[in-house]
Length: 154
Image 1: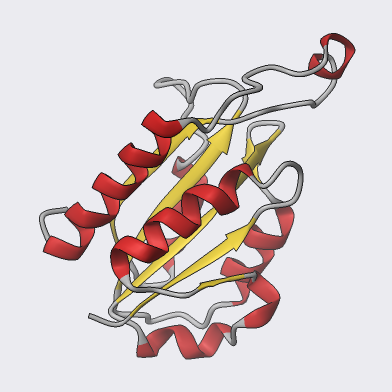
Image 2 (image 1 turned 30 degrees about the vertical axis):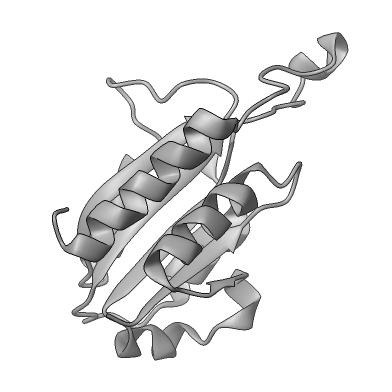
């Protein structure tokens, strides 16, 4: 299986740490959105898309990249994120990106999210939240998630 992970990690490296673990599990390179040709994604069997969550949304660089991907993709995809606050069931932050990927023709097979160190206001006033995250448990969960994707079980 040929895979690649497109990751925009900008604040504390939280999302990159998760992406690197997933990349090892999938034998996939981890690249920034600017490092890969959107049209070239059709050459992959599995593509991961991830970033930190900013004001309830994926990073603008990742969203713009996905918008630039030509339609009629036929591969599988997954979405992952780190965030200071948990994803709400009534308004999951992954839903808009999943829908956009599906409109592009991807089969989104799963999503992954975990907590991450966050210094967005007002959290900056108290030194941030989730200072030790992602932790060993989060990294192990990311590895298990990747193993499940590699095995085709997701």
